[in-house]
Length: 267
Image (cartoon, rainbow, N blue to C red; front, side, top):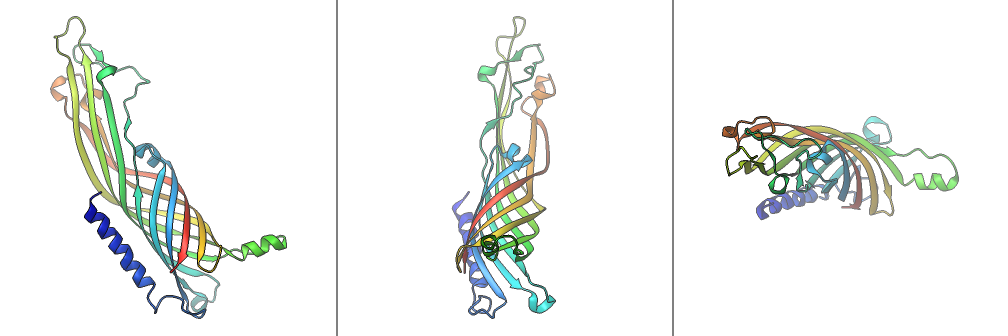
């Protein structure tokens, strides 16, 4: 990621934090209906996103504003809005289906695994907007459990993700000639990068525990998605060597679930 992109993202988060921490919003006394939090979040990803990124991590920095609505709707709870700057890393991996028969060239020759690979990497960074509702957990059970639940609240809502995803493709497929083939083998290969963005809705739910007046911990489950680029080299579907260096491509959305952990600090 380029330095100026990181700077812009950090500046946006700093501005948001400044706004939510302004005297008009921050809870200076117990009478204010507003409160705000800063969060450091890490998550473990499962589903299609884990397969396309070949990685199970997501991380982010977030700022949340919460508004108590008991004076508006007469119910004990709060509406919340949160902005998250996120990064979903990926790892290089070989996607060639080695567990099936190797592809065949137009001369009947087979793939030479010693000099062949199909390397991919896909990863993204972006912004997530979350809107939801939060309320204190009901107390029940033994006194110790009831005392613990007094400091726990549940929350749930919907999210909207906009990730810029970068897909890196680098492949070389060496089709070794047989005894009736020319001296030199056929090659299908190429190296390129594809980038794309999309708006993807999702949802989340979780629990928050306050260790103290200023520090808390969140555990949540989230469903989300991002842009995905799929490329198939020509040698995967044709023996016509004149098409080598080309391929078929498509775009779509990869979705997954994330188990997220967050440390929260009151602004």
